[in-house]
Length: 252
Image 1: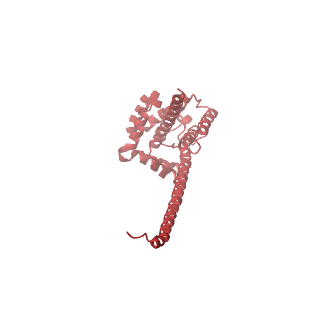
Image 2 (image 1 turned 60 degrees about the horizontal axis):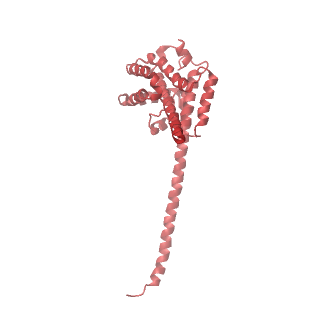
Image 3 (image 1 turned 45 degrees about the vertical axis):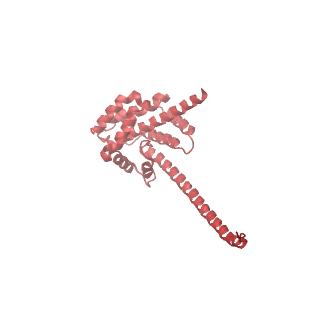
C-alpha cells in the first residue's frame, strides 16, 4: 500500500475552507431572514391587537371563536368604520348557511360561565334565527351586563366602577398579550354601550332598556355585536378560572 499523498490533502484544504465559508454565509442569511420574519410577525400581531381596540370602539370585541387569520384580515384594514365592520361581521356570521354563527351559539350555550342565562341565550338564538332581532337586543344587553356584574360583583351602572374594574383587569394581564387586548376590546365596547349622549340610532344600553330607542333599528348587526361580546366575556372568565385552578393545584 502506498504512502498517503500529503500534497492532495493540501490541495483539498482551500476547497474545504471555501465550503465551510459558504455554509456559514448561508446560515447567516437564514438567521437574518428568521429574525426579520419574527420581527414582521411580532409587528403584525401588534398591529392586529391595536386594531382590536379600535374594533371595540366601533362595537365589536375580539372573538375567540374566529380563526386568527380571519380576525387579522379585518383588524388590520385601513380606515375601518362602523358600517364596514358591521358588514364584515354580518357576512362572516351568515355565509355558508350561518355555520360560524351556529358555532358561536353552541359555545355560548355550552359555557359554564353563562349557565345562569342559558335559557335566555337559547331563546335569543332561536329568535335570531327567525329574524326577530328586536326581541333579542334587550335580553342580550342584560346577559352582557350580568356576565360581568354577577361573577365579578361590579356595579356596572356606575361609570367609575366600570372604569376601575376594566383597568384592574387590563393591568393584571401580560403586556401586549391577547388577553390584555380582549379586555381592552370589551372595555371599549362597554364604554360605547354605556356612554353619555349617544346617537339615537346606535346601540346604547340606557336608551334601549328605558324605551327611548326605536326597535325598528335593532338589526342583525346589533344582535351579533352582543352575542360576540358575551362570548368574549365568557372566554375571559374561563381563562381566569383556569388560572385560579392551577394556582390552587400548586399550593396543595
